[in-house]
Length: 409
Image (cartoon, helix red, strand yellow):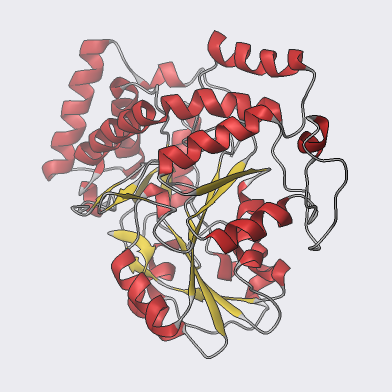
């Protein structure tokens, strides 16, 4: 049972093959089509396809003017690319806390307390595709005149109060890595409604050049100037072709994820004190990128993960907090992050992908019950019901044992 999985079919193969047969592989007409489609999907005025999600973050930070002497606040419970992107601008990442086990998004109160005169921007993550408290975040940003950069890597298709994640702040960033909701292998996007930010991203993405190779190929331009010290963060035609197919499928895939996460919640939440976060989302519609559980206090997570691995079930941890890594632990950040520390050793990410079946969710949940050694009360009741369901369907842990030994993280 892999942590995530991609479903490859003839339509995807033909889309990539068509791009190969065209003979134009670098950024061209398919990238332009994908950008138009993604802008329409998200409701953004501008969308720029880029080489990966980290490139999207870096472009957004540079476009917003972040640089040496500035501070950018972000949650420590996050992938390290966010902090690295800040550091690569010359700015300093400042870590803030999360709300707690029930809501793994950043705590606006702690974010506000982290603001200093040097703060330039807030880099907010919609953890697991669950929208942040954007009302509070935007209020803090407006009062302090700070840029809001949304890390929506987990959140394509997620909405808050009817608006798409990535379009709520000044600029939004997406990742299309192979395990993401919109998977194309590598790739990402930057979206914004701000024309000036769009102009900067457009230039920075391709070496600060005023025209692109595709423009010159079509005869729309014959030369170029360089007006910014930019980067090569372009997307290629093959990935754009795959992205167009995946984008059409994204709403249905997100709906499938929601059904599976709801089933996980019904089976796992409350089990011996286990928490499935984000139970109350009355103002939002999440993208359900990952299925995360917070194990009971004192649970040996490594032992639980090993028990699941032995039965062929891959798990992961999203994420080891950034402030604990040597690179940032030694950087002198001394802000206390008690809620992050509380969940850091209890987080476990369970398998989730759109074509996963409910029987597979039941199997993973039953094995988690077994790994936790749950006994008595509602936990035993859940375990019994799961066992009965598996027996009726001919499902048992031995089926999962045929999964590969060395599953990728």
